[in-house]
Length: 255
Ligand code: 13P
Image (cartoon, rainbow, N blue to C red; front, side, top):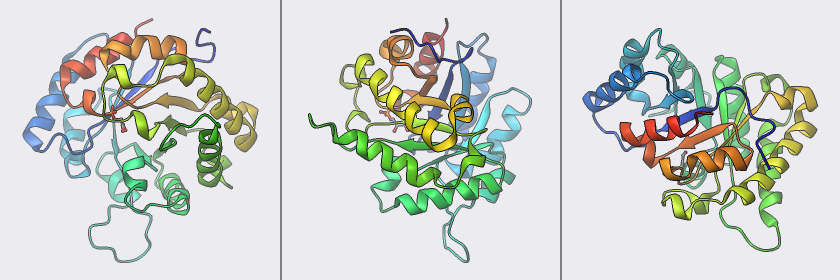
Protein backbone atom coordinates (compact mmCIF):
# COMPACT_ATOMS: atom_id res chain seq x y z
CA UNK A 1 0.00 0.00 0.00
CA UNK A 2 1.32 3.45 -0.79
CA UNK A 3 2.27 5.84 1.98
CA UNK A 4 -1.04 7.69 2.10
CA UNK A 5 -0.36 9.66 5.25
CA UNK A 6 3.14 10.83 4.43
CA UNK A 7 3.91 14.54 4.64
CA UNK A 8 5.25 16.57 1.72
CA UNK A 9 8.83 16.30 2.93
CA UNK A 10 10.16 13.32 4.87
CA UNK A 11 12.23 13.84 8.01
CA UNK A 12 15.50 12.00 8.59
CA UNK A 13 17.20 12.32 11.96
CA UNK A 14 20.84 11.36 12.50
CA UNK A 15 21.34 9.79 15.92
CA UNK A 16 25.12 9.85 16.13
CA UNK A 17 25.06 7.97 19.43
CA UNK A 18 28.74 7.91 20.47
CA UNK A 19 30.14 7.14 17.01
CA UNK A 20 31.68 10.57 16.36
CA UNK A 21 34.13 11.24 19.16
CA UNK A 22 35.90 14.46 18.22
CA UNK A 23 34.50 17.96 17.91
CA UNK A 24 36.67 18.48 14.83
CA UNK A 25 35.09 15.51 13.04
CA UNK A 26 31.60 16.62 14.10
CA UNK A 27 32.18 20.12 12.73
CA UNK A 28 33.60 18.80 9.48
CA UNK A 29 30.50 16.60 9.08
CA UNK A 30 27.96 19.40 9.51
CA UNK A 31 29.97 21.85 7.41
CA UNK A 32 29.95 19.34 4.57
CA UNK A 33 26.26 18.52 5.14
CA UNK A 34 25.18 22.12 4.84
CA UNK A 35 26.99 22.41 1.50
CA UNK A 36 24.98 19.50 0.04
CA UNK A 37 22.20 20.93 -2.05
CA UNK A 38 18.68 19.67 -2.70
CA UNK A 39 18.59 16.96 -0.11
CA UNK A 40 15.58 14.67 -0.49
CA UNK A 41 14.43 15.13 3.11
CA UNK A 42 14.52 17.50 6.05
CA UNK A 43 17.70 16.70 8.03
CA UNK A 44 18.00 16.87 11.81
CA UNK A 45 21.14 15.87 13.70
CA UNK A 46 21.44 14.61 17.29
CA UNK A 47 25.13 14.83 18.21
CA UNK A 48 26.57 14.13 21.66
CA UNK A 49 25.38 17.06 23.80
CA UNK A 50 28.92 18.35 24.43
CA UNK A 51 29.17 19.26 20.73
CA UNK A 52 25.83 21.08 20.49
CA UNK A 53 26.86 24.67 21.16
CA UNK A 54 29.70 24.62 18.65
CA UNK A 55 27.70 22.86 15.94
CA UNK A 56 24.84 25.32 16.46
CA UNK A 57 27.17 28.13 15.32
CA UNK A 58 28.02 26.23 12.14
CA UNK A 59 24.40 25.38 11.33
CA UNK A 60 22.88 28.76 12.15
CA UNK A 61 20.39 29.79 9.46
CA UNK A 62 20.61 26.51 7.53
CA UNK A 63 17.33 24.87 8.58
CA UNK A 64 19.20 21.77 9.76
CA UNK A 65 18.04 21.29 13.34
CA UNK A 66 20.15 20.04 16.21
CA UNK A 67 18.91 18.00 19.12
CA UNK A 68 19.93 16.12 22.23
CA UNK A 69 20.14 12.33 22.33
CA UNK A 70 18.72 12.13 25.86
CA UNK A 71 17.87 14.36 28.78
CA UNK A 72 17.70 14.06 32.50
CA UNK A 73 14.39 15.09 34.05
CA UNK A 74 15.81 14.62 37.52
CA UNK A 75 15.03 17.56 39.77
CA UNK A 76 17.85 18.74 41.98
CA UNK A 77 21.57 18.06 41.93
CA UNK A 78 22.68 15.29 39.61
CA UNK A 79 26.31 14.77 38.67
CA UNK A 80 26.56 14.37 34.92
CA UNK A 81 22.91 15.20 34.31
CA UNK A 82 22.01 17.10 31.14
CA UNK A 83 18.67 18.88 31.52
CA UNK A 84 16.23 20.03 28.85
CA UNK A 85 17.16 23.67 29.51
CA UNK A 86 20.89 22.92 29.07
CA UNK A 87 20.11 21.36 25.70
CA UNK A 88 17.88 24.24 24.68
CA UNK A 89 20.37 26.93 25.60
CA UNK A 90 23.12 25.01 23.76
CA UNK A 91 21.20 25.17 20.49
CA UNK A 92 18.95 22.11 20.54
CA UNK A 93 15.44 22.30 19.19
CA UNK A 94 14.47 18.66 19.75
CA UNK A 95 15.45 15.78 22.02
CA UNK A 96 15.18 12.00 21.82
CA UNK A 97 13.35 10.36 24.70
CA UNK A 98 13.03 6.70 25.57
CA UNK A 99 15.67 5.36 23.21
CA UNK A 100 16.02 1.61 23.78
CA UNK A 101 19.71 1.99 24.68
CA UNK A 102 18.66 4.32 27.53
CA UNK A 103 15.77 2.05 28.54
CA UNK A 104 18.27 -0.86 28.65
CA UNK A 105 20.27 1.13 31.21
CA UNK A 106 17.30 1.38 33.53
CA UNK A 107 15.14 4.21 32.21
CA UNK A 108 11.50 3.44 33.00
CA UNK A 109 8.25 4.48 31.29
CA UNK A 110 7.81 6.87 34.20
CA UNK A 111 11.19 8.46 33.45
CA UNK A 112 10.25 8.83 29.78
CA UNK A 113 6.98 10.49 30.74
CA UNK A 114 8.89 12.98 32.92
CA UNK A 115 11.34 13.62 30.09
CA UNK A 116 8.53 14.55 27.70
CA UNK A 117 7.20 17.04 30.25
CA UNK A 118 10.69 18.50 30.72
CA UNK A 119 11.16 18.75 26.96
CA UNK A 120 7.84 20.59 26.62
CA UNK A 121 8.78 23.02 29.41
CA UNK A 122 11.97 23.91 27.57
CA UNK A 123 10.16 24.19 24.20
CA UNK A 124 12.05 21.22 22.76
CA UNK A 125 10.24 18.94 20.30
CA UNK A 126 10.23 15.45 21.79
CA UNK A 127 11.15 12.48 19.59
CA UNK A 128 9.58 9.64 21.53
CA UNK A 129 11.24 6.28 20.81
CA UNK A 130 9.24 3.09 21.26
CA UNK A 131 9.74 -0.52 20.18
CA UNK A 132 9.68 -4.10 21.27
CA UNK A 133 12.79 -6.07 22.21
CA UNK A 134 11.74 -9.11 20.20
CA UNK A 135 8.96 -10.26 17.92
CA UNK A 136 6.98 -13.37 18.61
CA UNK A 137 4.11 -14.89 16.65
CA UNK A 138 1.53 -14.03 19.34
CA UNK A 139 1.61 -10.29 18.57
CA UNK A 140 2.90 -9.34 22.04
CA UNK A 141 4.84 -6.47 20.44
CA UNK A 142 1.59 -4.55 19.94
CA UNK A 143 1.02 -4.54 23.70
CA UNK A 144 4.59 -3.37 24.37
CA UNK A 145 4.31 -0.52 21.87
CA UNK A 146 0.90 0.54 23.14
CA UNK A 147 2.05 0.59 26.77
CA UNK A 148 5.15 2.62 25.93
CA UNK A 149 3.11 5.16 23.97
CA UNK A 150 0.28 5.49 26.45
CA UNK A 151 2.45 5.79 29.52
CA UNK A 152 4.67 8.41 27.87
CA UNK A 153 1.74 10.44 26.55
CA UNK A 154 -0.55 10.21 29.59
CA UNK A 155 -1.93 13.69 30.20
CA UNK A 156 0.43 15.12 27.59
CA UNK A 157 -2.05 16.04 24.83
CA UNK A 158 -0.52 19.51 24.63
CA UNK A 159 2.67 17.93 23.29
CA UNK A 160 1.02 16.71 20.13
CA UNK A 161 1.85 19.74 18.01
CA UNK A 162 5.61 19.13 18.23
CA UNK A 163 5.70 15.40 18.88
CA UNK A 164 7.61 12.98 16.66
CA UNK A 165 7.37 9.24 17.32
CA UNK A 166 10.23 6.95 16.32
CA UNK A 167 9.38 3.27 16.08
CA UNK A 168 12.59 1.37 16.70
CA UNK A 169 12.27 -2.38 17.19
CA UNK A 170 15.28 -3.28 19.31
CA UNK A 171 15.92 -6.53 17.40
CA UNK A 172 16.47 -4.57 14.16
CA UNK A 173 18.94 -2.01 15.54
CA UNK A 174 22.63 -1.96 14.70
CA UNK A 175 22.61 -4.53 11.90
CA UNK A 176 22.45 -3.96 8.16
CA UNK A 177 19.77 -3.30 5.57
CA UNK A 178 19.05 -6.98 5.00
CA UNK A 179 18.28 -7.47 8.73
CA UNK A 180 16.04 -4.41 9.00
CA UNK A 181 12.30 -4.66 9.25
CA UNK A 182 10.50 -5.47 6.03
CA UNK A 183 8.20 -2.73 4.68
CA UNK A 184 5.03 -4.81 5.04
CA UNK A 185 5.66 -5.62 8.71
CA UNK A 186 6.51 -1.98 9.24
CA UNK A 187 3.33 -0.75 7.62
CA UNK A 188 1.04 -2.78 9.88
CA UNK A 189 2.93 -1.60 12.95
CA UNK A 190 2.76 2.02 11.85
CA UNK A 191 -1.00 1.75 11.27
CA UNK A 192 -1.27 0.42 14.82
CA UNK A 193 0.88 3.27 16.20
CA UNK A 194 -1.25 5.87 14.43
CA UNK A 195 -4.39 4.32 15.89
CA UNK A 196 -2.96 4.42 19.43
CA UNK A 197 -1.89 8.03 18.87
CA UNK A 198 -5.39 8.96 17.64
CA UNK A 199 -6.92 7.38 20.76
CA UNK A 200 -4.42 9.10 23.06
CA UNK A 201 -4.25 12.56 21.47
CA UNK A 202 -7.43 12.88 19.42
CA UNK A 203 -7.68 12.18 15.72
CA UNK A 204 -6.74 15.62 14.35
CA UNK A 205 -3.75 16.30 16.63
CA UNK A 206 -2.51 12.74 16.02
CA UNK A 207 -2.56 13.24 12.25
CA UNK A 208 0.15 15.89 12.63
CA UNK A 209 2.51 13.59 14.54
CA UNK A 210 5.31 12.35 12.33
CA UNK A 211 6.04 8.65 12.73
CA UNK A 212 9.58 7.57 11.86
CA UNK A 213 11.24 4.17 11.65
CA UNK A 214 14.69 3.34 13.05
CA UNK A 215 16.63 0.08 12.88
CA UNK A 216 19.30 -0.63 10.29
CA UNK A 217 18.14 1.97 7.79
CA UNK A 218 20.75 2.35 5.05
CA UNK A 219 20.82 3.82 1.55
CA UNK A 220 19.81 0.43 0.22
CA UNK A 221 16.48 0.00 2.04
CA UNK A 222 15.41 3.58 2.76
CA UNK A 223 13.34 4.26 -0.38
CA UNK A 224 11.30 1.06 -0.06
CA UNK A 225 10.73 1.48 3.70
CA UNK A 226 9.51 5.01 3.06
CA UNK A 227 7.21 4.28 0.14
CA UNK A 228 5.82 0.97 1.42
CA UNK A 229 6.18 1.24 5.18
CA UNK A 230 3.82 4.15 5.82
CA UNK A 231 6.40 6.22 7.72
CA UNK A 232 7.25 9.92 7.50
CA UNK A 233 11.01 9.33 7.63
CA UNK A 234 13.74 7.72 9.68
CA UNK A 235 15.81 7.84 12.83
CA UNK A 236 19.20 6.58 11.71
CA UNK A 237 22.04 5.25 13.83
CA UNK A 238 25.25 3.82 12.34
CA UNK A 239 24.57 4.98 8.78
CA UNK A 240 24.18 8.58 10.01
CA UNK A 241 27.69 8.78 11.38
CA UNK A 242 29.30 8.90 7.91
CA UNK A 243 28.34 11.81 5.69
CA UNK A 244 28.01 9.81 2.47
CA UNK A 245 25.77 7.12 3.90
CA UNK A 246 23.60 9.73 5.66
CA UNK A 247 23.23 11.76 2.45
CA UNK A 248 22.45 8.56 0.55
CA UNK A 249 19.49 7.99 2.89
CA UNK A 250 18.35 11.62 2.61
CA UNK A 251 18.41 11.37 -1.15
CA UNK A 252 16.66 8.01 -1.22
CA UNK A 253 13.70 9.92 0.26
CA UNK A 254 13.33 12.08 -2.84
CA UNK A 255 9.90 11.64 -4.31
P1 13P B 1 20.94 1.76 13.57
O1 13P B 1 20.53 2.61 12.42
O2 13P B 1 22.42 1.67 13.78
O3 13P B 1 20.29 0.40 13.52
O4 13P B 1 20.39 2.46 14.90
C1 13P B 1 19.06 2.78 14.98
C2 13P B 1 18.89 3.65 16.18
O5 13P B 1 19.00 3.18 17.29
C3 13P B 1 18.66 5.08 15.95
O6 13P B 1 18.24 5.69 17.11
